Structure formats: C-alpha cells, structure tokens
Length: 114
Image (cartoon, helix red, strand yellow):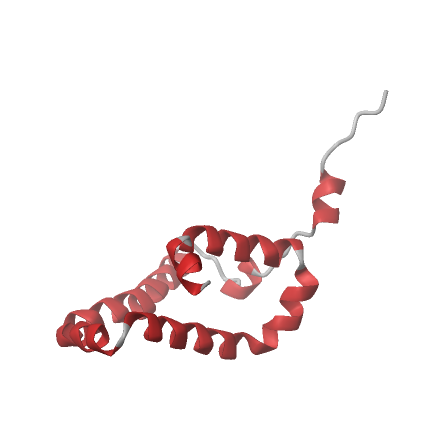
C-alpha cells in the first residue's frame, strides 16, 4: 500500500489537503497529534529509502545544510523583512489563519431565482 501511495505522491498530497478542507472536524481532531504524525511519516520515508542511501545522502552534508538554512531561515526572514519594508504589521498567522468554510463560500455566491 505504501508503494502505491509513494508512486502517486502528488495525488496523495492533494487528497490530504482536500480532506482537511472538506472535513475540518477531522482536521481539528488530528491537529494535536500533528507532530507524532510527521514523525511517523519521516520514519516511513527513512524505511523506504534504506540506510545505505541515507548514508550516501549525508556525504554532501555541507551543501544540504546550506540549502536547509536558506529555505528554513533565510527565506522566511526575507519575507518578514520585505513585509516590514512595505508596512505589513500583522503577524503572519493572522494573515494565513483565516479559514473560509463552505457555508461562507455558498453565502458569497449570488443566487438568481426566477
């Protein structure tokens, strides 16, 4: 089963994202367990890759560390700096945490009754 999911990873990602939007109650139940779920997924990926490939990937650790620092530290700090320059003072979680429910979407769509 994991092999099938890994072959269709993009589709699995889309299904997962759609599930969180369509079933927000399920997402709220899983939210406290998110760190454990990520740990399980990383463990499964490590099993799939295997120890020999993992050791081979560690041989270029300086380049990997540079990429991780740029993507995890440099880019977010750059976005914050640009936002600060343009006067965006709201914290990022305020900007990104506005969830639109299906009911709100339906209410926003005008209906024409004849």
